Length: 158
Image (cartoon, rainbow, N blue to C red; front, side, top):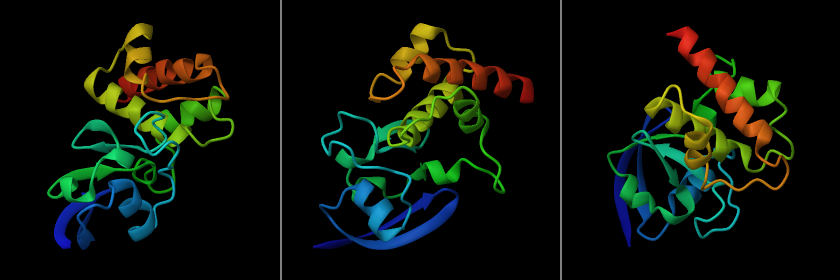
């Protein structure tokens, strides 16, 4: 059975008919063609599918598209502005926190949700903020450095 939903993805209003059991991840990738959101585990454990919904980092592989009705979603594609990387994305590049890239979109979105809530997090707060994002390549040291660096850049920009 299909249901009508209306939501905003990366600033664009979207109206769609969706099966009631389709995940937000599937909707974002298959219906919207936004491929930056990845499916890793499909059980909400790895964080590769993380998006921001109304300011909160959410695992889209365990979130139904119908639950997103009326909500504002940001995917990794929604962070850059006019082709310029967001300061968090830029810091990840500069600090070498991007390797295979599979987990990075979800990790960056978790970092953004954290920094939107807390502009100057401690290292422990950063670790807690990205605790739901698994990375097998970097060992997290560079990711934490990138988040600290982007926090400083974002503070200066205010």
